[in-house]
Length: 86
Image (tube, rainbow, N blue to C red; front, side, top):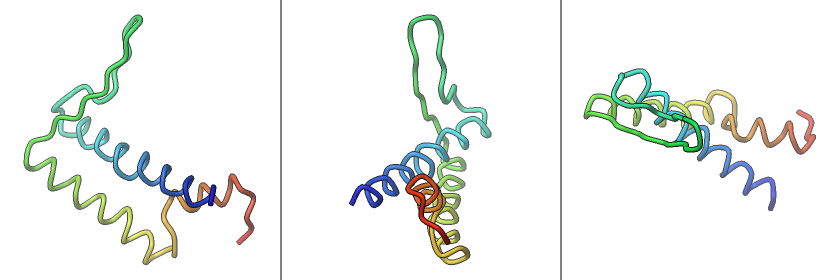
């Protein structure tokens, strides 16, 4: 059960949030993650092109990795942390 929750959390963090920040930074539309002094901010600002690229990257992340490797990156990380062997 903990592994499943960990995989879901890692896939959300890496697959959804991480790619959104990456696309925001690559398209030059926003700050992404910024920390100044005593505050931190998280901004995702995409135009329609950035949104389409983000959807494509999410599809590649989840479906491409699952088809190619048999599991997502979150699954690999959870297996490594939990100590499961190949």
